Length: 481
Ligand code: NAD
Image (cartoon, rainbow, N blue to C red):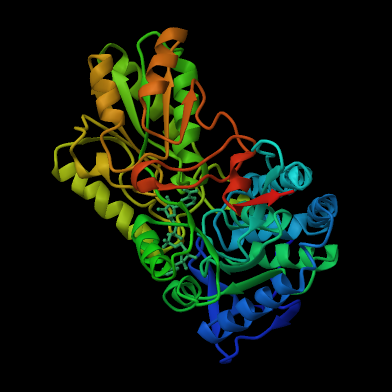
């Protein structure tokens, strides 16, 4: 296991490893200790300019576009193979800069490889249509790339989130400038190294770490980008959309969530507790599609709560590198936010069944796994995203009421339900306003299943075949023979 983190990391622009053009550096800290672990080059607007110019030059050179699609696909397979060489270091940096558990850190590598191979395999299968117009005319469509795809990635899953967007962009002939998250940038630098070793053309992939308010705004507002993929919070997403509107460029927006699972009385309650606990406590709840609300039929409410509390209290909390079940939150600011929202829940009358505060005696930003009961759907804790290991349990009496509660937030990223009744499952799945619905297993699906939001959770899809369509625009060619 790697325990030494390289002390300094540079940005990857135009096929070269470069310092920040203004000489600045950003400190990266370990959320399990609060201590700095290394520095990264601080990308500023000037570095974003250089990166966009490199991506533009690469796009204009047609090196990717002229490559047969199956070769673009083979390139994704080579990047995936190269990640094997970095596997130990990736698992380590995911623990040290991101706070993942060692098991989750290790899982990031095969997950990322699956995205690369999935989209690599689709590179030569994205086909247009031939449209019959009658004698003397021939008409067909082409999936044309946008050009330079600007991608802004959050800190909670930078490697798989970044890699899947880069893969979609490259196999469709776009080039990429990716702004990596300032809190957890390291795994994407290792990804850039894999791209370099795999022979990705210079300028096709540029990875620049910088602050959101500096490099992020510069990228979203850049005059020479053609497309934006943003994954992050709703508030930041809105500002990115305003910048995109100025230039009328398309966006894929993957934003936050407050996803709810409905527990019907006939459900297997052991399965419910295991699935609901995994759905909120994985990565300490810092997953956009975490199951942060559980909407439970009153007849099984007490039993579900007691099973869930038992699961929560059985979890070990501590540094990911020690392979505890639950690592830290990303920052002191985030821990303060989650605790403050818990206090708001208590003052609004909700009951804490377990947790509700930071874990005493640990140096880092550890939040106790938390279960709230007696929660009303209009409380802040039932409406606002915690992005922490906190689940609110809301009772219901009728199916209509359960559906109304599930759909009763601004978000629409994921939803779930637990029942043995197939008719009920299909009927309710149809009524839930969410981009993904899980029946009897939170996160059923994965790389192959289209993922994205409804309502304020965003639009466009990542994962699955649908994602590729977000990276191309349809061009129609009509010919008078
Ligand atoms: P964030 O919005 O604060 O930051 C996301 C990225 O945007 C970071 O790289 C940040 O540096 C950058 N950024 C910040 N301000 C910017 C600005 N003004 N202009 C351009 N870029 C800017 O989000 P976060 O705290 O890093 O991540 C947590 C949020 O992301 C949660 O709301 C979570 O639900 C959401 N998320 C969504 C998905 C999804 O697929 N739907 C996946 C992961 C996370």
